[in-house]
Image: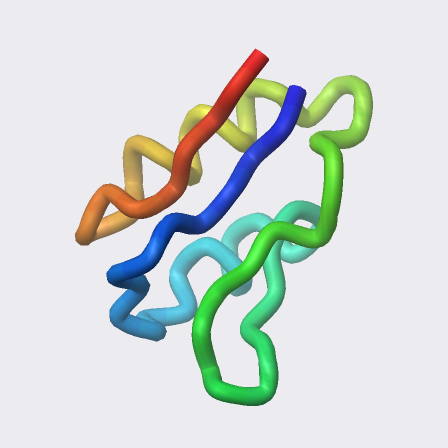
Length: 61
């Protein structure tokens, strides 16, 4: 499963704070995925996408 952060992130930090194994804030303060979703964390990736206030987190797979 892959998770990505599309353009439009408002740098609220919710995903990185709630799901630090999946997301981080880069030097510009914009969220980015750390890589493929680790086994067993698929539900967390889906939850992060649902919770994103601007809907820029996309889950594939």
